[in-house]
Image 1 (cartoon, rainbow, N blue to C red):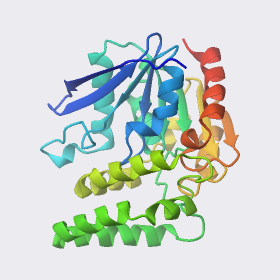
Image 2 (cartoon, rainbow, N blue to C red; image 1 turned 45 degrees about the horizontal axis):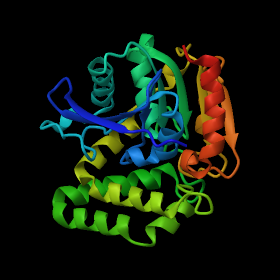
Image 3 (tube, one colour; image 1 turned 60 degrees about the vertical axis):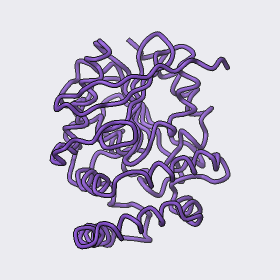
Length: 295
């Protein structure tokens, strides 16, 4: 497979926040939206494969990695991120694109479709959800009330002692035990996903500002895109990992039931990061979908 050269850039979004993006290849555009606190490396296999024949675009959310952070943290919201996507489209002079979301990126794209449906050629949802994902998260190990209480306690602790909580956050995420624990919870399949890719992810999470993570995590819990599902008339492929303990299949089944004409792909052994676990399978199936539904 030929390595396609990367082109990078930045632009100012609606409120002046600098947004970083990368693009590779030429042809019909694909815009990839990663999960909360993730990074573009989560799409590494899709970028390499699809940039051979498409114009593949990735970007960092505001407050993430190479993008800027708004001075007003009220501008860290689902709607703010959606405005950034729209601004990216305008900056690149794109009328339509294929939009792919992983995990929280699916929520983001539901809101985007709600506001700008005419710009969406088709949708690919991977291990995603329309509403608060803590319901069903980690199976029966932790209930939603427990997860919510832990998060609220973490928030209160940060308000009282931001420096120690930040140190704790970074130490916990980069601890060698975090990788097997994440795998046990269904975040990765250690038999399939490269350890290098997981380590890149943990370093990326550790670099994220704790306050930004908490703000967007609360946004994620509060946003409910269920009503948008029945509005979608763009071709939609929904991918679900059979071993995903973070956003279990019930979330993807609900989306499939409510999006008319949607296709559901259940991936054996796929974790929460199915696109990293079994990239060849995911890529080939998605390529077939694009050939049938790309404008």
